[in-house]
Length: 78
Image (cartoon, rainbow, N blue to C red; front, side):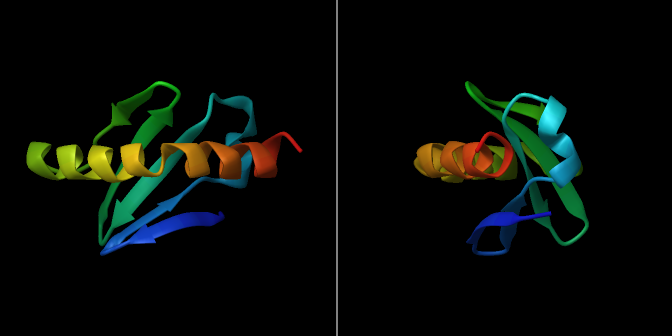
C-alpha cells in the first residue's frame, strides 16, 4: 500500500488491489479513514472524520490532485 502523500497527521495512500476502480486515495489519521475519488475530486466514504476535517482533507487533496493522479497512473497504468 504505497503512501503517496503525508501532510500533518494525514497519510494518503492506495491499496495495490485498487487497480480495478477509478483513481482514488484513502486518507488515514489514527483510527479514522476516508476514501476520495480523484477525478473529479469528491468524497466516497468519510469514515469517522467530522465535516470540518473532511473539508480540510479535501483542500489538501485539491492542492495535490495532479501529483496524486500521477502517482496513481505511475503505479497502475505504466
